[in-house]
Length: 112
Image (tube, rainbow, N blue to C red; front, side, top):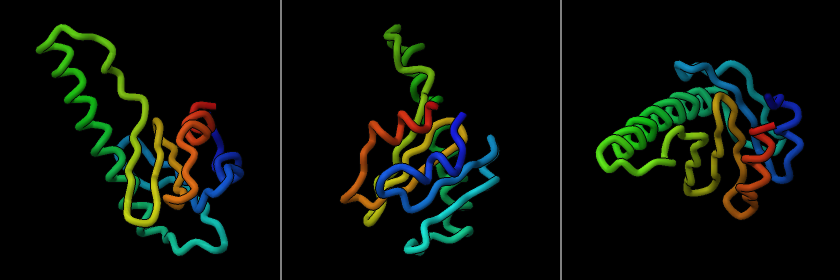
């Protein structure tokens, strides 16, 4: 399980956060030059849980309806916004500016 401090060490990370299975923001850190706020991260936490739930429902439905396997379980979620990208897995996430996103490094750190 990663820590907020280890996630903040990723190159370009503007913020790292942990959220509960219900989407409540549990813990977070943001870089000094970031304009991310606790309110934004709380909303993002709820959005991540909601989208993981929807993706899980779709993956299970697809597997059930088609007999094709390998779509479930859902292991992560990426949200690409106008200025930044959030990469999440389980109950942790990182936020990076769009011009400096290393998806593979982010998912590797989140899986540690």
